[in-house]
Image (tube, rainbow, N blue to C red; front, side, top):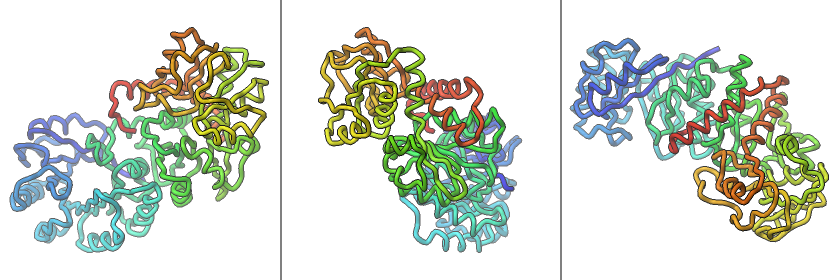
Length: 490
């Protein structure tokens, strides 16, 4: 069983500021000092009084860094860092500083390669060549263009790193899983910090929200797969539940460009389960080995459970949707207008029909609305729904979700019914809900449904019920973080 270390990157405008931020880091195994970001780079100042092992980096502009001086000046900085006893010094492979490697015998040297545009086709041979130099650590940071690209990084770690000398980083949103599950990729360590354009996250997020300190190469992987999941609160909810029950599992955002993209990744890495969201609820239905009855009826899945090599599809959306609604309103006999024609609309339509509610599906694409209505005895209505034709309005579209918070799927003047239910949960109170309240409607937010269906997913995966309140509290905390910082990254 192996576990990756945590390296926290710090930057600063001056050497004094860099040292101050270095000393403020908590819980790190290694601190990367980015001397290229300071205007007065001083190795003695950066190293003075350190209590945590450090990695000195002076990244040139041609390799994505900020150092704009000469290569000779940069080599002197790195050489001085080695001489003064830095625990590690990062040397770019393309720099050609072979004399530094030879003089140190590779000890304390991290030989690095970065590709900010994609994944080199000859990555494996590059790693082999880099390892042959004798460098203590070989670091490759590349940019996956889809989730499946990280499967190649998985193979790279499996074949090249039996000795703990490799660090593999997938930059950008598709590579985030390599940071959390660094041990699965056989990385000696992972990086955290504030360099957002390469996909770094705060160390506190990595250690608290994702429980990085407990993740090994055997930790079970779960995640939420969708088109854009950076603002999903599902990782916070499920990781909080795993933590409360002391389970060896972690849950990560898994953005996928397509259903096959996720399937390729999931089967390669051995995922144990996944939540499925927009736009893959319908497309992934065709890729599971088996689907439960409710998922077959809906024609969409929101949950995958892995049993051995078999992928089982389920759907907890219908029950999750109904639970908060039935606890606060009598819906039998109501007229419901469902906005949208995706996987969530399918679940809502089936769920409402099971309660005796009359359902009419409304979508800009009438053919798609007809396909949803055909699942039950629902009707198809005009877009938008006409005033006076509904008692319950349900928005299943992503309109109004972060970052499109000023948008609404239906104008305020048309909100003439009794109940409005918006499945969007980020923000917790959407423009649609605000305007519905102003029109005198009773409203329901998407967070209630999200928590209810997440509880069902968790129990299906683990056979254990998540502790009461843990998921909701984690979701609210995460949403508050998003509200404080619109640029907050997963």
